Image 1 (cartoon, rainbow, N blue to C red):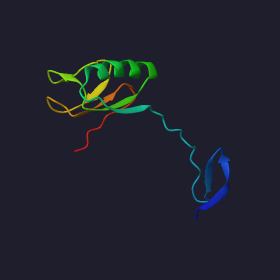
Image 2: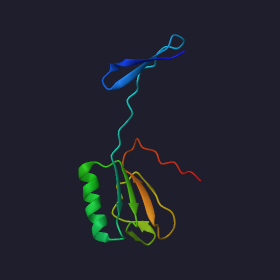
Image 3: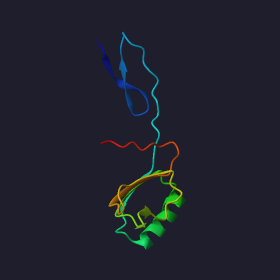
Length: 106
């Protein structure tokens, strides 16, 4: 049976003690910077957003109404992956971190 300890083992984390199972080392999750914006199909917003993403090293960008030309989203050629569907996408998810994965759920 697990016993809760009110004394944290590490800063800001409560610990669980159990006699049956060994404690597993705590793994630090990766932190990602995520930005969401409605670009309203504007080329100016797309251009400025590209500069912002590069300067602030954004990992994941979620854009409503992205700027597109001939069925392709423009200004974000540096994205490692882009998820957008259709000739005139209403939303797009752009990944700039090579360690991120985009998974489509249907």
